[in-house]
Length: 71
Image 1 (cartoon, helix red, strand yellow):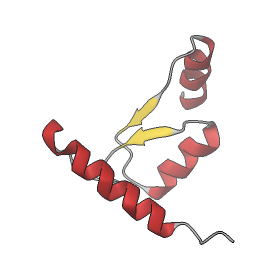
Image 2 (cartoon, helix red, strand yellow):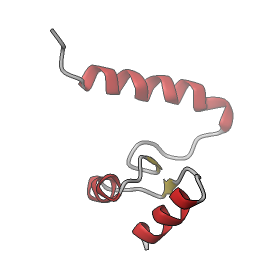
Image 3 (cartoon, one colour):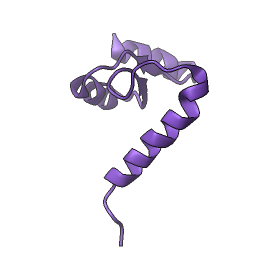
Image 4 (cartoon, helix red, strand yellow):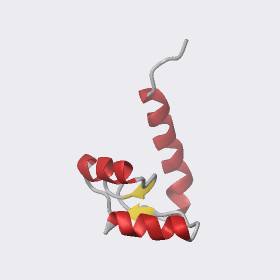
């Protein structure tokens, strides 16, 4: 089902956002299938729209700190 949905979206030149991602295993499966965008409890509980900018900054900072230093 995931592969078919991603193929249809690609043919229509649409982006796909997987919703309800709760585990690292599901995230890995989606990445391997070619789905680059996802949301769900793996990253955060639902938040009101006005809190999104702060949440995005926090997640971006956490991702930056997880990257290895480059020479």
